Image 1 (tube, rainbow, N blue to C red):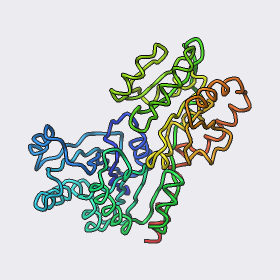
Image 2: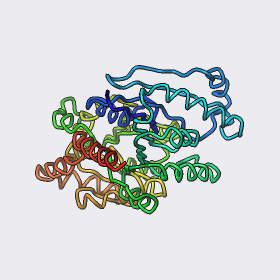
Image 3: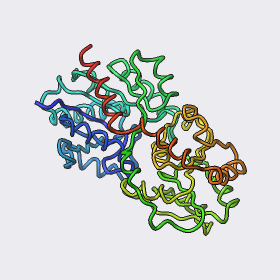
Image 4: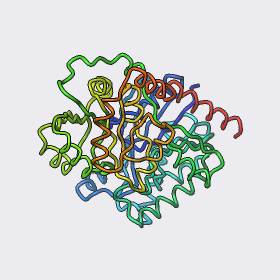
Length: 376
């Protein structure tokens, strides 16, 4: 019988960032039977979603995924923390999710977000192993009110009490969690390195190109980016990923800003290969100081110079990343990165990315899981 993983994601299946489903598909390739449970979060839905959720009570959606992986889309009835509704939601989730497992008490429960309604399920189902994977500082994310932050913290405390192993994406997250749990392992982003090695820059646009891949959202320092684009009118700034409307309105005022929108993961290597410099113009706040962006590994795997605002995760990469904390320095660093680039520096960047391969990351995570299973 295949070992089972009930994986609760912080992303919906089919999200533009496919990291979570890629990870679970790779575990499925190794013989695990994976049930991918889509994001439920912590907030109450808006009114327009409440009727649809109410109609879904008593049923759940299930979709096919890659071989060995099935996708479940449970719903929760609002208002979520009202006592009677909360009891109904917990019972409903238990019935939906445990029915997808052949042997719940032998399964691995892997959570990437401490949604409060799921914590009693983790505690009462008594699975063989509980994994908590912390990707971001969710407690400091946009829209997290003080009340919701308290709910989040209580749920996370309970999850940490039950967790056997904790994976943290960044060193700041690892250090914070290590004060609350004895077994916290650094396990940051990973990419398919071969796809970047094989990418071609055929069809590359003329002139200098700066690229940004990923969501253009609250994490972005839009004021800095607008000023940088204005300082470099001869450059093309290529953006590949979903963009919030207010950000798009500000950037679209520049004729040298090019938007690809969300792109399939297989197209990212070619976009980066066609660029001269790759950008990470993040805000500096309590959320971003805990980031380890996937794009950082992708940029390095493409061999490209990287210019970023200061982030703690960059310290491990030394001089391979150019850091600038204001717009004029950021624009200067973008230009000098091209002037000072070389084949040796490109090889060094690719080499730095080599430890972030999917093969290595899954090996490391599986080893930690096996070690925890032996200790359980």
